[in-house]
Amino acid sequence: MRRSARMGARMKAALIGAGDESLHTIQKAQELGVRVTALDGNPGAEGLKAADEGLAVDISDEEAVLETLRPKAPDFLITGPIGRYLTTAGAVNDALGLPGISRQAAVLCTDKYLFHRKLQEKGLRNCHCCLIASGVPIRKEEYGELDFPAILKPRYGSGSRGIFFINNKEELEEALPKLCEGEERFPEEDYVLEEAVDGVEYGVDAVMDGSSFRMILLRRKLLTPPPARQAVGYMAVSPRESEESRRLCERVEACLTEVTALLGLQNCLLHADLMTGDGYVFPIELSARPSGHNLHNLFTPMATGVDMAEQYIRSRCGMEYSFVPEKTAKLMIHYFDLEECVVKKVPEPEELKLPGGIVLRAWHCTIRPGDYLEKVTTGHSLMGRGYFILQEEEGLQDKNMAPGAKLIHAASMVLGQFGLE
Image 1 (spheres, rainbow, N blue to C red):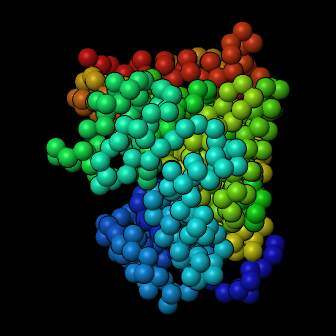
Image 2 (spheres, rainbow, N blue to C red):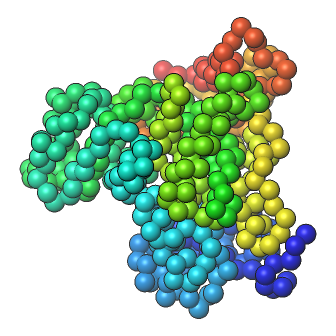
Image 3 (cartoon, helix red, strand yellow):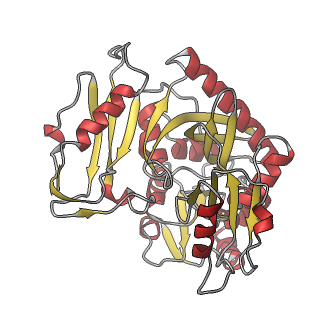
């Protein structure tokens, strides 16, 4: 095992944005002997409590963050599932000469409009997209050439917040006033309106190992119907499962290799969303941070044997590391997408009835009898309920069923064992 560049001295890492989804990365860093300084604008953030040093700092204020971190002299940054203020991490890397994403690249990752324009210039994104700017009257001529259906979403931010699936111009006329403050026709924030691309949606967990793109896991998304299209589950895609799966993984890897090179990404973890169809891959979003929703910290390590946070930290500390999957198990993570009902009974995990060849690998349910479950429209309305993970045992797949169909059926069986009214 190689020694670190600090010749045995304890390495120091900084974390910008210390919500509860950062806890896994903090823990892995500490297990490897790395001292963690965490910053977050919320003094009660869980990551501030878990870090060796937790500091309440507004992470949108780049100068305040830099002033705080300069005397700490971190060796590198670690990242959790952070949103818009990934740009602050880029600014810190630039100012302190640290490995990782630059501020310029972080802007391209977090600004959906600039991301679109950058990729469209190189032929990596083929759709119409227009900007609806805050504080500017909405002009119909700006979206006159757009084909429907279309997606209307905030220019910045993540999750399903403020996303509208628009089928025609009439629906757009209904949606646009909802972006505006009071009776003014001025949007409160920037939005982008882009043509919806048809296909099957996937998520990707990956890493930039130096300047080389390494895909760790491709995940097929299970979505609610439009307009929400909220992910309610993910299934691991193995390149070894079939020739079709192998070709799909190769196409995705080739596309994202081009995208990450174009964005100038190096030495960072990655999360991407994309759409695939007959011979094409359409990048929806890509950011230099790990995925949330118990994916990078639980599902991906369980499916592949690769804990991307741990391996990234090891790489930065000069230790042996590997981002190559040991396997790709037939795994599904599913969230409790029960909706508009009152829960009368919550099943015990040990009593669940499952099809033959399906094993329950994990269960975390916060739903209690008497809870009212609202309609699933965003990640916020769903993720706090918990999750379960199912695995299809190797060699027991029904050849008469499509890949993943048995897991989908099993998930429906699990949800059907809740008592509802």
